[in-house]
Amino acid sequence: KLGTCELGVRCMSRRGAMAALLRTVGVAVRREVRGCAPGPRVCSQKLLLRQPCVVAPCTRGCASSARPSAAPVEDQGNERWALEEQVSLKGGLKSAKVHVNYEAADLERFPQEHAVFRNEPRLMPSSLPKAPSEEEMDWLSAIKTSISLTRLGDVCSEPFIELVYDRILQGPLMESFGIPAIEDKDIGRPLHEKEVPKSGAYITLRMQVYWLALHVWLLHSKQHLLQQNNRLFDSAVCALLTRRVFEWQWDRIRMLLFGADVPVMSITNELQDLQEFVFGLCKALDDVFAAEATVAGGTAAALALDDADMPSGCYGLAPRTKYALWANVYSGNVPHESPELHELTVYLLRQRIALEATARGSFFMCRFDWSDMPQRPVQPDV
Image (tube, one colour):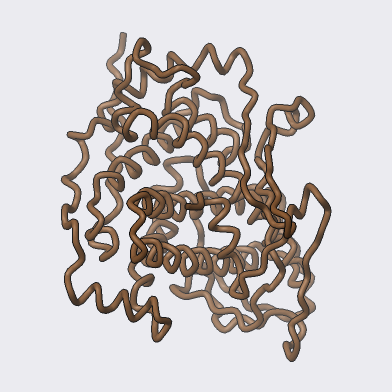
């Protein structure tokens, strides 16, 4: 079974290209696309088109190293992050683990944050809507999924893509977390256009990409939980969904790069750079939930643990999730007490709790929706 980083890397491009330890070893994998016009030709001139369509898709391999990406600039030389990698005999990435060297201030703050999130009313299982409970797929959905697995046609992944697409249209929700909303705009321009990204455009774009990637990670993390029962059918469906959703994600990010006025000749390199940021976030979240939620029996159980019941070596699921979001989505540029950071942590944990409670059949038939996000209760004046 592969986590988000390992399985996602294999599904990055339509050709399934995989670059081995691009940043750490310095190996770049390039493939020439024959018969293509100079530069991608965009079929649609609107950024928020439902299906982004690029005639000449990127075929450059991804970075399989998935470096932890967003430590603050002032901390990058202080060995805050350590990446443990295992390489196969064929040169591919076998496994990767992110070690976070928490500072003393972080370890001192974690117990306080754990208590805050333990008492957060929006993280109580009773505050979430009842999860869909269909354990088995109905016969029609099973037939459609089987057709998709045989590659006769894809009628399986579209509902999942629609779920993720809906999230990037929720401008007010994104702004409530301090993430700039994605504005629809014309992106068609001449090949030799001299426009360049405006000041701060890359930071804005990266936060929007992280927002998209969080929902892709949520879906994939649920798939990984379902694969633990070792059903061959489940594994095949999860592999198909991962490939299709990740492909759609990269196409969408490519369109965001066009919308940010990134020069055409730089699109491929910038996309690859963002892929490394995305996998750094996904791997960090994978490690946090594996270390904190799995041993406790699930996200809800991990959040409800008292300090005395905390397993050895655990610091609390919510504080570590919040730290991963702080270091990646916000690039360490906001205070740890930021209301937007707190709200995004609550949002992510609510979605994870809801997905864990969703039955197997309901998930594969995509008969579920994202959990709502109630407003933060007003604190009484003291």
